[in-house]
View 1 (cartoon, rainbow, N blue to C red):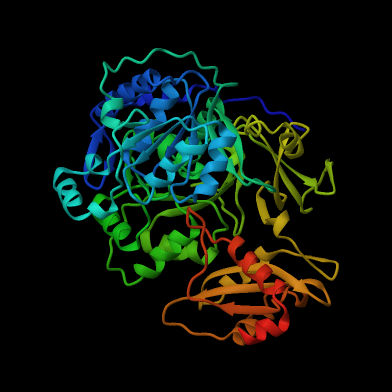
View 2: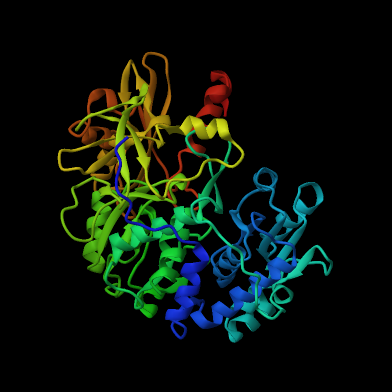
Length: 554
């Protein structure tokens, strides 16, 4: 492994919060549904919540869960837990009880923070019965809304509120912060102390907790800052539509935003009409997103009815960014949309294109500061490949996790010579720009040939009728596996699977040609809005398990 001289000093996460409060006390820190909080106001709430968590027994290393959509509580409790010495465990509010139970038990979460919503609270409350969860901090949705909206919410949204018992296991947020706001100081070693357990499926197996240290996360923030806005601080407005419980938004929206004193414009979910209205009205300057979000905006605002010119730059992650989507969005807004690459185990940013200089088509860019990238032979991970050779992307840098929580064997499996194996196949060109070919696990083996779904997906995106495309491998009696494509078309444009195949004949090889192209009205997506293959693979598995004569009758 190569070595680089480090240029980024590790620091504790609470430091970036306290520094922002000190530098930007009167600046708006969070705008949520038109209720605005200054850094000074949120600073007081963070201190009170930190003291409250300590009074509940949170000590250094205690795991505290956040099961919240984007709200001011997400920011307050995140930094309060860290300031109290605890470890944040992020939970997706859409988890089913089985998923939530696994993560609580695996992480040892004893306190959970959630909302009083009927969609979320009952699932969390059920965990008090048969897991290690001991207490729930319940935040009232109405209390983080402007007064007029809070009244309307209380009057007309009662059916959406959960019945929360008044007992010792359920502590209201109001009760949590009823103290002097003077938390006990906790010494933090940013190099070794864990800040966040970020659960991820990784390359294989059940979800595992990536142990992200304070130093991992603050280093990644500094890496983002050097890419996005090295000279500009204190004047940015960041639109936070991506969920803060996901590592991409946690870093590029919340931690990065706080570091530079930005105003975080938070929305609890992605609704295209609301997003467009918010952009016009509140004029965000930075908008991290995933390709499906930018695609939706391209389609909804193509008539020029919305003024989106306030957006100066965007960073796209989570999935490959089609060139056509990027070009259309940049033309629509006048901004610079750059693609980055990362993973939960690396906090997440690893490689990114630049706001200035050359960004090669389909490239994910160049390594972030202090980051070493090597392309290694998947069959012999100790062998480093040369320029243009395709292999597994391996990463070393200050943002790479300390390992998987209580899983030394699986940690050892993904670490080689001090480098993190990403599970992605890619290559480096002669100028040091990196390109991702596909996930190792998504590789389709067709008659002894390696077929990469991403190559087929990118070819499909070149057709003017294609809005979204996903390719998976399906069993094939002759070749072992064959590609199958699922496509969603743009509104008002029609095309047949046969026409798409004809188009692909000049785009890809015969071995890469999808055996089947299925056109659908909707394609499944993950919690952050990127296209998901998991559900489609499961559908095909079920089809293959049903006898042919039964399928014919269905």
